Length: 417
Ligand SMILES: Cc1ncc(COP(=O)(O)O)c(C=O)c1O
Image (cartoon, rainbow, N blue to C red):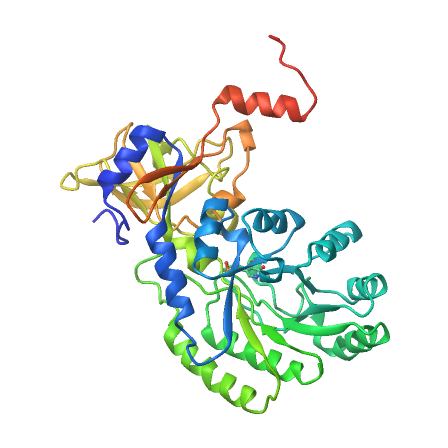
């Protein structure tokens, strides 16, 4: 068996895309993104729950437009992400901006743009209140709950840099009160790729309890973090069960409420992760004595998750004859570091240079974390539209264009000019 996780798309399509666009290329499935948005929106039919998409997971503007078209707002974390969302026509009141060590200039930009600013420290709250008295904002708290698929994305634990300590909530209230600023929202995000749904329920409880201290509150944002299975036998997060349990709590909370109120979630990975594939080509098959390497034309510059988080992505050889024998390979990238391994110990059919590999579940935190390390160009991005067309949504630059852009940005000129 070469793969335990099935391709979400016909391999012929991937061959056609590799033939036309070359590799490395990210391929996204519009249909799947839409269906996933709709599934989320159906989870809480009886409650005022709205969905924001965490732009950092995949910020290609074509993808953002699809998700906006499904009725999502956006969760952003930088001025640049805000500008991107505004640029695709999003109403500022559907953009939630969670700051993290923001500058004064960024704060003024956010205020000017009219987005919902979510503040994560007392210092920033004070400077916001001084600059914008009689306005309103949201605050992020640190719920002291630990979760996430890796320590590097465990954001709500006791030692996390994010959010205002719960025991400082009264201080936040008094700072806001001093300047007649309404704290209209409260937010937390415990981590990305949550392992235990109970932790998200506990976080909901923490936020509902904290909300009792906030008289002007209009909404609670419970963050994102819904995980996806990267391996076939991985236990998947039972969203329906989670929604049932959360609904019980929402019912009792809203029962006591006499004013309009809303809840938000802000997932990224769950929406786009399974809808993206990184297509790459095998360039080298190399026996290093104890290890057999498949060398590809991509690397951690294009998909950082394996190197950064030891993350697992299923890899499928879409070119090899599945009836040939299999081999155990280490699938390696072309970056000049020994840590550039995309898949360790993978059983794949006998593979040859020229074969195409599909790296699955690469739609989230793939292209957005890509870099020009080793000065290589970024991958192309192709969307399989809901009508079944293949559409370029980002072209790959040639080596010449890549170097030209770099020389231009650094103020250098080409020696041959
Ligand atoms: C504040 C915030 N909200 C939402 C998300 C989205 O997380 P995920 O993609 O795991 O749903 C993140 C990701 O780190 C985040 O930092």
